[in-house]
Length: 618
Image 1 (cartoon, rainbow, N blue to C red):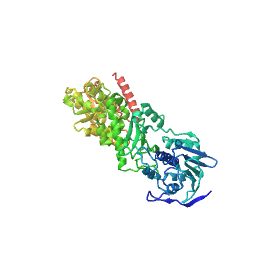
Image 2 (image 1 turned 120 degrees about the horizontal axis):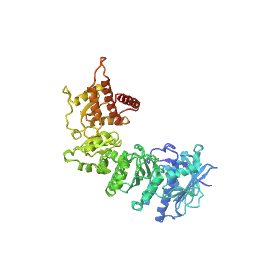
Image 3 (image 1 turned 60 degrees about the horizontal axis):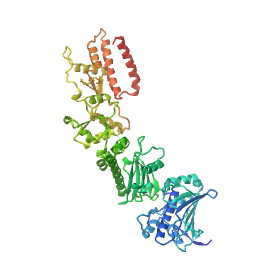
């Protein structure tokens, strides 16, 4: 065989930083992605050149991969445009000179995409191969086949080749430590990961492996709900069906297509890395695109496909610039537009999925002012009224004229059942804000509506929940409120507990309630959030004693009738003190204020107390 030329590979630093073999790519497996992508480019080039009359069109384009386990080789073949001797010298020997840009200048068409950007993809083969051979025949008339080979050093050999049809074969002689890539299952997995949606058939030993169809490249008008759901199930198997999807498509000022899905979040979701997959011209690049979309949209799933997102030379990491930030703003706006459309056109469907999409909307509103303006009227709250959900604006419209500035809300229907029942008993409508995010969202909402005051149901009780009676006065002129306050203060001996005595309306009003003043509780919640723990009962809190409750009235009578014995103790007063502490512990229990280790002691004290009451004939 005639040797046409021998020489050294030229590295063009004016195109890119000096390339060091095996230092560019973060993972060796991407060699297959790069070589298959080059093959698809070659097929696209042949089609475009054939339309211009510069070569024959040939058969339908395809990529074929063959494995020779005996000789430890992997061969990637295409039937694309091929290369002449001069083109091999220009595009293979000059590292970092990409033929894609030069080719597009000659055959410029808006609807044809060339994948190559850097001219480095071919050299990724040396991460896994001890020797690389390239056999190519140009599709242009009267071309002759050439064979290029290199062992990874700067030296190469260019000879006459043997190939009957236009296209290129790349033969990789695998390194001993990279023999996992001569296993068909490994290559099949790589095709599925990186090349699944390429528009060209990718065959392994004659069998087509990739799906080829990329639904996000189609018009939304041509896709059905079934099409969207099938793509989601394929990308995220066994994850349940999505709640909602957003079709993305724009060609100015950048080219971008995609489909994003709102998943059913079963846990906290990935708010840091994300699960959206980034593609470049249907080639998988990365599943970490935190630089592209706002943080509050990272738990979304789906695909973003754009050749205009700047990547590093290995196409494995993003480079953040103004264009990336602009794309992030575009994605957020399209998500907001889709939510507004659903809320307007399908309100029942919107209500149905609200709890699933609420975290995205609330966090997005707090972090992005433009997004907040889009979704401000889309935030829903559960309500104690008959309707399942309400907006803040609708809630305001139902407030009584004499109290239209206060918004009542509840974060735990069980833990705040006592005060909630009092408010409901007086006909007040209460918003239900029971997600963890609401601890931050309510203060944000209040700051946004300066004319409103937000009060949790257990923050304070106003006059509408209290009886107007002045209490009972004893022989010394002390009213019952003063007596009860004194009794509880002595029995509890806890200066951190502020005591209030009121006569509450309603037969079902409890003996005592724990109240948490709004600002104090918010500080406690914020501290718990920063420490990544659930907020507990603050040490400083208010104990509201309902003097109209039969148990409280009984304790007051019991303490008033106590007789001090000669030893200075009174069994009756001691019992009254124990009942007082029991009332306090029940109030704490109702708001989850008893720690797990305290429950056993509480149960034992309760049993002992009941036993003593039975002995006294109560």
